[in-house]
Length: 378
Ligand SMILES: [Zn+2]
Image (cartoon, rainbow, N blue to C red; front, side, top):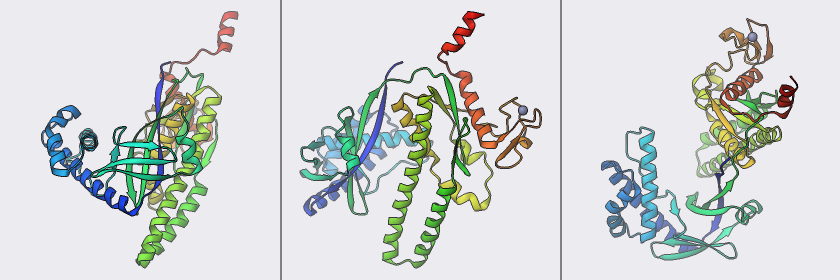
């Protein structure tokens, strides 16, 4: 198997002195104005290639917005990538960037220094800031098996953060000996084809509590309540991320231990194919399935586990024992009973088994030594 590149992002809080803060704000505004200009040019002239764009915008970016040579290139790259993404998503209008958007840094525009400091390029030379590292960030940044690449400087609620990208070459996955299917859902956040379930009940209780508190704060509308709302949304986001980490870690570890591939439905399923009662709509749309899926994907890469995405069509209506497909097979949300062969199962487990089956059809499997021995003795 060939190697694959795994990437991860480490976000670090910055301690910025007031003079540096002012400089960074000015730079941030100029950088994003320049990126918006580059995007407009790329959009209007239909340019997708960075080099072509460079020749068209470079002079103006420097003269009009006062960016140095290197930051001008970073603004161009940010713009070019946004335009390309907008085109491939068939967006109707050109992307633009707010004054307080992020600044992109690359190897030539920022430098990590001893004692957890970082030097950042600005409109007026470099500023040096202190990285405020927790144990987690330190452990990540000082792990020399990961190579540090570019970074994004962002400002959230008047605090600066530097998000550094790290990458590492890891061996590609071995050929699996089987497939662990995973069904993502609302009542059960995840169910695997071994029958293990990650219930959404506990999560839902916490989210409900946040929701009530948020409504109360929104009704108050004072400055203090707005500040508390912001805090609340941060806490809710972190809680959600934590749950997704726990589930993805468990699933990937299980697949790795059994030398199995993981299979998931293509994500569109969750929003499009499920009928949702009105009371469930809020929790339904807000739960971060996309995040859970991306957590599973990147952890799988690191663990050498292959991930396969399968067609989600009818996975919950098809019998995993005989293949008979009928809407009425699924009696209730949780109960599956096949009208043809009588097979009975927990509905989500049945779906997970179908998801596993669909993946194993097209997947080259490592030959099981036991199977080979049986064949030899025939
Ligand atoms: Zn059946």
